[in-house]
Amino acid sequence: MAAGGGGWSCPHDVDGRCGKVNMLPCDPGMKGCELYGRFAFFNDDKNARLREKRAREARAAGPEGGGMKPEGPAGAD
Ligand code: SF4
Image (tube, rainbow, N blue to C red):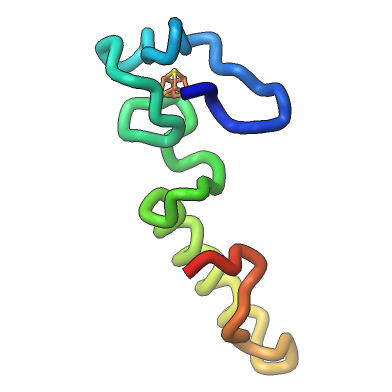
C-alpha cells in the first residue's frame, strides 16, 4: 500500500513493505512505524491517544468553548 495521500511516500517503504519493521506490509501508523503515535490516521484505533489528548484539552478549555460536540472534525465513528 502506498503510504498516505498527497504525495508523501515513506523512505522505508520498499515495494509496499516496510524496511523499518521487519519487511512487513507497510501499514502507516502501525507499531514500529516511524509515524506511530505522531499523526492522525483513518484507522481510528491509531487515533485513540490523539483523541484522549484532544478531550483533555477540550475540558481544560472550559464550558465556554461549547464542550464536546457529537460531530467532531474527525467525523468517522
Ligand atoms: S509502516 Fe511506516 S515506517 Fe514502515 S514503510 Fe510504512 S509508513 Fe514507512
